Amino acid sequence: MRRDIVAMSQKDRQRYHLLKMVTGERVTLKEASSVMGVSYRHAKRLKRRLLSEGARGLVHGNRGRPSARALDPELSHRIIVLSRTTYRQFNDTHFTEKLTEIEGITVSRDTVRRLRRNNGIPPKRKRRAKGHCKRRDRKPHEGMMVLWDGSPHRWFGEDNSPCCLMAAIDDATSELLDAFFVPFEGSFGYLTLLEHIVIRYGIPCSIYQDCHGSLHRNDDHWSLEEQLNGEQEPTQVGAALKALGITPIFALTPQAKGRVERLFGVLQDRLIAEMGLEGITDMEAGNLFLKEHFIADYNRRFAVMPEGSQKAWRRLPSGLDINRAISFRYQAVVGNDNAVRLGGMLIDIPEGPGHRGYAKATVEVRQLLDGSWRVYYQDTLIAHTDPTPLREPIRAKPRRRSRARAASEEQWVYLPSAVERGHFH
Image (cartoon, rainbow, N blue to C red; front, side, top):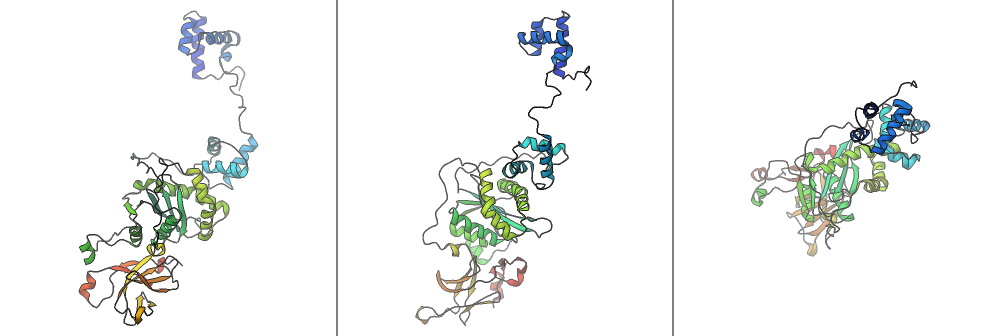
């Protein structure tokens, strides 16, 4: 810059104009100081500078000089290199955290953001104006409401098959209660999530969820028994919630369950980047990383204090068989040979008390989350077997001799041929 050229701001130009009017005796210094918004004493200083140094005297002495707080050029270059290589999947805030925690570089998020934009590194996600939505107040106490959902995504990169991340948060605190990967979103994922929550924290008062087929009956079929009862039989997950006294609340739009939707936005951003940094490319390693590191780190950063100090989690009732309550249930009729048949699988019923048999008896068959089977007759365990593959149950009409009766009934059926795409093992 040439020494005879003075870069002046609009504020400096105004002061120069007013002080020239003062020296020309067109206005008084007191009137000029009022317009400039400075004291009369400071206006006298400015007038002296104008008379002694000219227009340059009105410009701040540090203008054009590098800031004493400016980042070292070598450090700036290192940050940009790290941003383009090791941490290329990280957003501005996440990258700033890793600079402090791993690289030992302490800079502000605004500095990182400015460096990245000035060097042509775009933001990870584009922001756009959001439509107007009314915020739903948080529940005041922990355990009053849990929000859960599944997020199918390519969690391990474009080169690996997509899978589903199951996750649940507490509405009062946004604490991530549990999260794990499963092959697809279904009953097994939700039942496992429920089991983890009630064992670790207790029974919540309600669960806020969407209308996924594993959670909500979306068919129009009503059996004769359902018509008489005035309600459809719940899904496998719905039956488990009912057994535990948990109120299901269904959201009709993604916006209605905004907190859990935002959770998955954060996880698709941060979790993928963290797993990429650790070289994690499969569900088993991903679940271990979630359990041992990520969930605790997420809660440390994002969980908030609840409005109330009392917790609303209920203790598991004494005598409750949690394995039976949170499992897959089927209804079956014992054959003349005292065996239960489900989808080609055979469960032999041993002889009961007093040498009794169970032929023609209607029994409840449960497959636990570990794959093992139990058979109950009037709440009494009468048989159990070793684990078999877990499969997503379907609603279907059972085979019966009476076509008229079968036409009015549907029940949960274990059919391997109908769900080969969805087995868990």
